[in-house]
Length: 82
Ligand SMILES: [Zn+2]
Image (cartoon, rainbow, N blue to C red; front, side):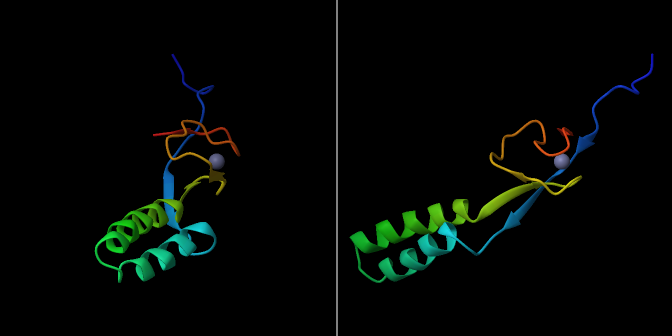
């Protein structure tokens, strides 16, 4: 039994992007940290959101950006993620 018709597999690459929304959240979060106690709490939440927002996943095979880190198939080349 051959597997020549099987879909190609690829790795997901994680990439941090410091442009756009993630960066804005992280900046505001840092400023809010100064205002103890509520600002500190809100700032910590914003830093966490900013970190998530600034993380992007890309297909290692074709470089397509994935909208969802739990994606199973690449929207660009159709590869299955391991
Ligand atoms: Zn791909």
